[in-house]
Image (tube, rainbow, N blue to C red; front, side):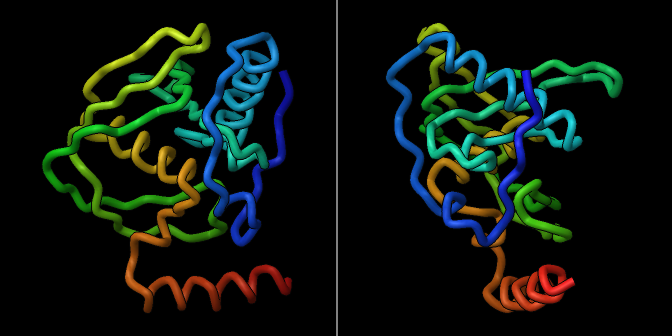
Length: 167
């Protein structure tokens, strides 16, 4: 296992649409192990493959219920097929430097995906778990949470980012 570099906005790979995974092999397992290690090292709760420079449909999500545990789920080729209820809550992103904002998401979603062996997964996610999955699946479509805020707030962030990148 290895900690990978997390790619930050405005890197082009973050805007790429991820390709579907066809091979469920040792390389996929190694990649997902690296993603999990990278997510926890960065103190994140989710990570999409785009965020480490790989435009493939892979997401890892922390599902720990206690602060000192590290429990996660790997979702390959995830699809959100249904959503209900709207919740506005604060979000940040490992790929968006020094910024967080309130983003509206579904409170409850239906997710279909595959596990590391290629077996079908079909489940309902709610609340925090649903928010994280929606955020990470957005990455697979080249969408960042800042795309879901007002153009004024996005413009202010871009100005802030220019200053950060200058320093």
